Image (cartoon, rainbow, N blue to C red):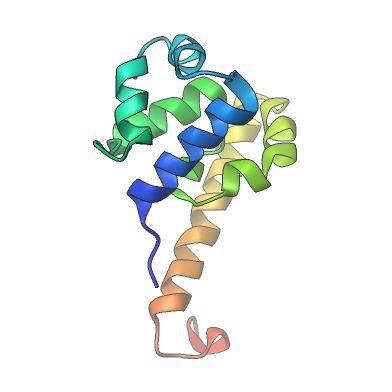
Length: 122
């Protein structure tokens, strides 16, 4: 079962609004209007999706690990990790993002492989 990226991004935007910003307008302001309140409303109502470049920009602006907007509930469930991530220096965040990308790539390959996990790199 694959990740529904559109749904994950919508759920993450909704969680950010509810838990962190209180309104679509406040989140739009925090994002420097890369997404307007109207855009956020359309995402919330599932009228529009969010492009990958917008998701990456949101992660960059809000200092959220790269790729987390695409993962259902990672921002909600990982909010304490995000706080720690935000305290890292830029170089440390790049390293953390690279590590996350590596692990996600491997896990995705493992899920779709017909080989047992231990045999993938053998």
